[in-house]
Image 1 (cartoon, one colour):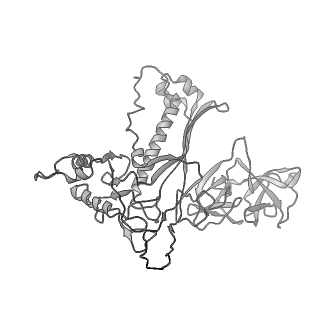
Image 2 (tube, chains in turn orange, green):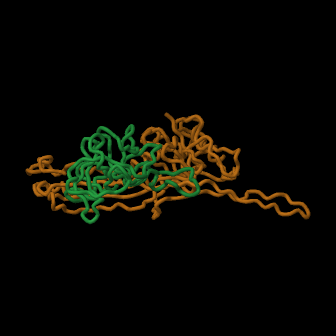
Image 3 (cartoon, one colour):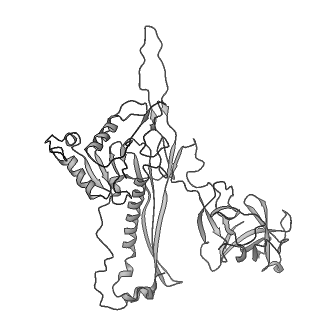
Length: 304
Length: 161
């Protein structure tokens, strides 16, 4: 419980009013890194199906060849609750000359926002290892050998075998991975990124602006047209300062992306007065689940 | 065995703790730590090892025992809630005397330390036949309408709390 003595600086007037307890924040970054939604389910369950992908040449009088579609394994996700609170003694509130001890709700709302940002940052951190988050093929989001349900011999990569920093070369390699994307039958499908998420690295951000923004190919004096800008002219470049490694980057096809943060219970702020101990209590709680099912919407690179 | 009331009022003292991979205890079992994770206690524990009484069975959280054998369950939590064996949580159990048959409690039994007898999974009783080593509980009251129902707290010497 917050007692008077712990905040005795607030007993007397004379402190400047600017307590720096509320800095300007970034715009929400987690909403760029994952799709926001809601759920009223205790458990989220999902699978993927692969329908017929070929017709068979048929001769005179031949019967139809009937086949069955394929269905993948089941994947599930369940939410977690996040909560916190303040407890402030009545005398501490009465003696606070600046009213700062009564700003608990605002602080808890900030804590909720920060918790989401770091949880999604942690999700990004895990996309190459899959310790906490795995998809339909029981692999991390980014793998060199994703499997498909309709073709046991096909594997698909959505990360580079040799992770290199962001450059014309690495973006071209990512384009190759996108061009080689396959569906669950192992047939070519269209995947074309329209969003780039960078870490907190100014050099990478500047480089991205040059790669996707210059009419002429950057980093060379050859005065060639910038083919990358022509092919990816609507690339949205964003930065996530909450992922641990600032050098990692990932490309997302937002139509295909299947990573979600679904809110089960929106943030609830409550305050009440406990007569027994003469204390004001403020609490916040919320529930949400972070998960992904289909890995096809992203291509990631993790240079060291 | 289950939580009955908390001295001074309010809800029980509860903590959510990770259980061992091989743990098989159920709601109502007395639990202890094994390498920092919960496992079922025995009736002959010595030392301050008892954490409390399991308020849920292992593998009972959302995501467990789902139909169709899911290959991935994101967010599944290998934890259980435990009613802690502190001095203020009062628990309810049946009183026995060296057998599985319940016996009547008398006022003379109140305030005395006794041991435990495990009748079956999740069903532990207070055994008035155990009064020395392994006496982990002290009776604080009994139900005058059903004198085999007793209320107790875990002894400090046998508890981690």
